Amino acid sequence: MLDKIFTPTALKLIEFMISYEQIEYFSMTRLAREIDVSLTALSQTCAKLAEYDIITMRPGKTDEGMIKILSINYSDKAVDSIMRGFGPLITFKEHLNQRGLRTK
Image 1: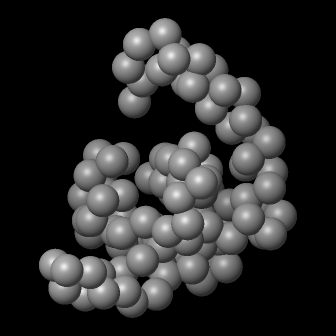
Image 2 (image 1 turned 90 degrees about the horizontal axis):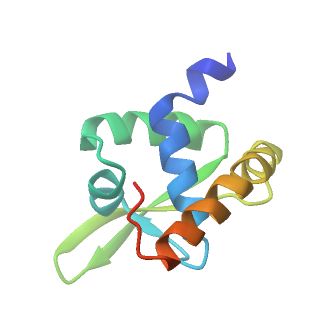
């Protein structure tokens, strides 16, 4: 069951959102571009993660029109476990970025 929820796209999404936890919410379009997945794949992944209360999706409005806004549920136990697992990787990526080396 977990492999159906935590697909490679889901893990990329969660890792990205955790890496930028100071940002309160993200637009679907920006996330798709940032993690290099199609908007369709991201939308399907987000629907599954929202079903399990790992992320929250809500409509939002910008100057460009209506968008879907995502936020991560940091109180979810699965998110907490993933954060602990991604913690060293995120620290390593931050270290590389500080040295001017690009990570993706």
